[in-house]
Length: 226
Image 1 (spheres, helix red, strand yellow):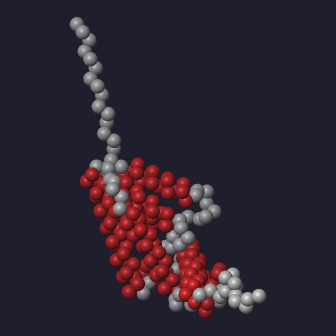
Image 2 (cartoon, rainbow, N blue to C red):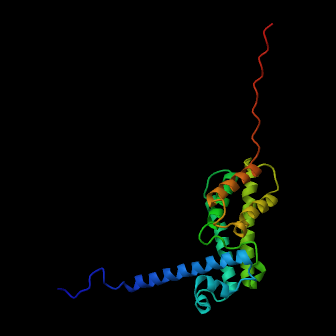
Image 3 (cartoon, rainbow, N blue to C red):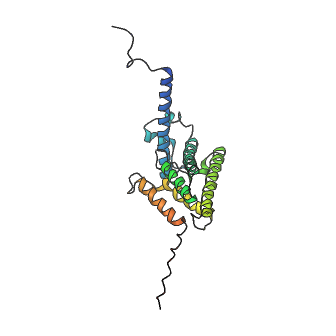
């Protein structure tokens, strides 16, 4: 009988072992983000401590600090996830060859899909002032770029006739306000599924922004013969 270990019992290659460790660390870091984001949304940043997050995860605070050095760093990571969601939606819209309204809905739907995803409930509207100055500047700059791109999509829709006459800036504030506020009120235990919410919000946005359909032209009635 050979003493050579079988493939099933052979130790994993060093590269594979390192990959597995990295993957485990990534998953644990995401678990911390999920719990922290949920706590920030429910209690607010000021009323959430690292002890609170560690308690929910069932780990010690020193263990938590292996993934995030401070509560501010956790909040910054949450904001980065939120910005990533918005930028992913904009990239998808840019790749679509359609009207401004179609692009806007594709973008906002992808944005909402990110919000309803594993890490999507990260706060985007609150607690920016709690970030350290450098992180706050980064988040504010990214948020301004997303807002500007949203306004450009709406302006495109107005120009191509798919969106009715409106102020693109005000319309973008309305659209982003609807979507960005989802993490503040959505709960998994609520009466509506994410798909239902996305469909409803998309329909409401379309009905509010779409250009009115042109009235049908009626055929002139034939004059009776004398």
